[in-house]
Amino acid sequence: AQSVTQLGSHVSVSEGALVLLRCNYSSSVPPYLFWYVQYPNQGLQLLLKYTSAATLVKGINGFEAEFKKSETSFHLTKPSAHMSDAAEYFCAVTSKRGGSEKLVFGKGTKLTVNP
Amino acid sequence: KAGVTQTPRYLIKTRGQQVTLSCSPISGHRSVSWYQQTPGQGLQFLFEYFSETQRNKGNFPGRFSGRQFSNSRSEMNVSTLELGDSALYLCASSLGGGAAYEQYFGPGTRLTVT
Image 1 (cartoon, rainbow over the protein chains, first blue to last red):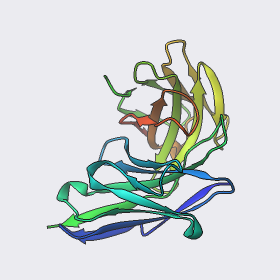
Image 2 (image 1 turned 180 degrees about the vertical axis):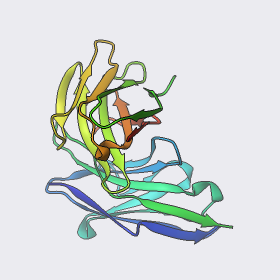
Image 3 (image 1 turned 90 degrees about the vertical axis):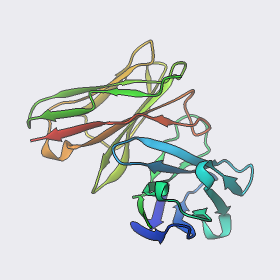
Image 4 (image 1 turned 45 degrees about the vertical axis):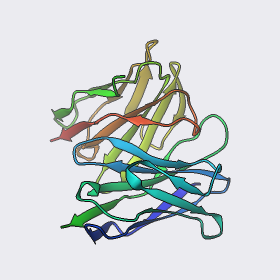
């Protein structure tokens, strides 16, 4: 069964500092991997998606993630944090089998950005 | 294009009652998925509907059910509510079923069971 582990339920950075949110996956078949962001009292918004076209995936709002098969990782990074990045971030995985995949989410990482 | 809408946004119910939540997908989207979000369990998949058929189902008791109409709008129903059903219920729509299609989430319905 697929699973996702997000290391660190809370991450705090200073404005302008590097953001690094960690995600490791477990999948028996080549996965699709996703990062979603959730702002307070809102639904989830897709930041980026890995579908095997390229190992470095660029997303919205300056975020990117690198797929590393040898490490089964898909960490999310942003070179310079902005106050507006404060939110909860979720990594998710699904298999690439056709038809009835479902998204399996990690527990989430709450990002705080300090001025 | 209008996003995914969910009604109601907030709901308070009593144990033992039943509740119906509604989701209107983005125009043209045929797949609707439902998720439960709680602080303890995180985001958990409930079920997915595509063209009025349930394609996939998560590990929830039979008290949780859903349906999809011909216009792709979907409802989920929870019968005999328990305190543990208090959660944010999120609906997501996509053009088609399967991982290739991006899911667009609604703002959720916050259900409180007292």
